[in-house]
Image 1 (cartoon, rainbow, N blue to C red):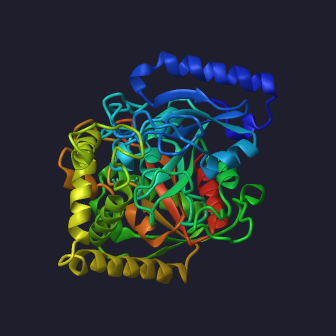
Image 2: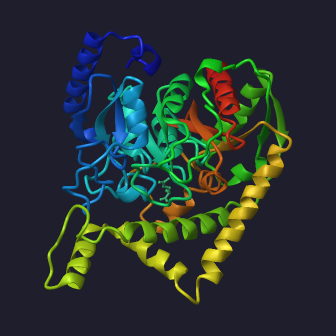
Length: 445
Ligand code: GLN
């Protein structure tokens, strides 16, 4: 598949045939189930869009039954920005219901296969976007990352996925999961394309009250892989990872050294605290955000005998099991009597996590970390929800701290599956993030 950079040079006729080629390939690969809808808006460069980002007049369902029949009344800001840059939303990609999950198995539309091995999960929640790019069924895609949902599926499918600093990319028109953690970001074939798509979608937006105005912050014209950076590594942090991930981590450290970067060893607190703080925070926010799906204002309605019965029927039939679990737990941690013990405590831990990163970043430019404890596993391998939550240990603290991070493929495991690692940067230092990632990508060639 041609890259986004190359596609930007194509004439309109070539783009039209590219859209046709994509359509043919997607229809020839239905079992992959990367796309849940194939619409195309405009004549620009086709970009796949996760099913929780609004494209005007398209259905948008967040992978849920409860939003069947809902049509977006306006474009998300990222979509407006893409259109202005000559990019066209092309197809909606599969995802875990309301972006809750790490495998895309909780989607109303059924599972998406990993393009490298049809028995394995593509990761999640942006599994459809990752599989589409990994299988050559998209030039590039948008995903959303609340606790790893761009970076982990990117790692599982052997592509690049980037989560911007919180506030860099507008959330206007993104189906909210946990508003203080969610960010939209690029999922691409290489680092340079990620920088290009990041530039297109980022920037201040008055329609999002958490959007931050930090100047234009564009990176792709200034990419400099020759910069020599100081990169922190976390030897104790990787002890829980599989041998494939540990080996890839060790090899990548050597690659970075050989490329002229300085490696220093650092420590972060036990990531088990990240899991607790993240899931309490995310579920509390999710409960609040999902209260609006009542059968009256959006999508699918199951009419009952009276109003309350309609709410109950709509929500009971509309939401899947994982979403219901999180609504229950979210209400629990927010209820009076438990609020201080869980929610307030989680916010304190969140602050400590942020401070830990700040301390490390006083001395280094970037941090190198695993993305997931293992490579992509088989469907059904993580049936226990707690096990699934634990698999997020390496990604969620970055969302809690609001930092930018990029996952890129660095190695192939013994079983042939890709291994991804992530680089993490200071808030709003996407330039250094992309410079370091490009340097690593070049060194691996
Ligand atoms: N797996 C994590 C969760 O289920 C992260 C999901 C995401 O980033 N949207 O919450």
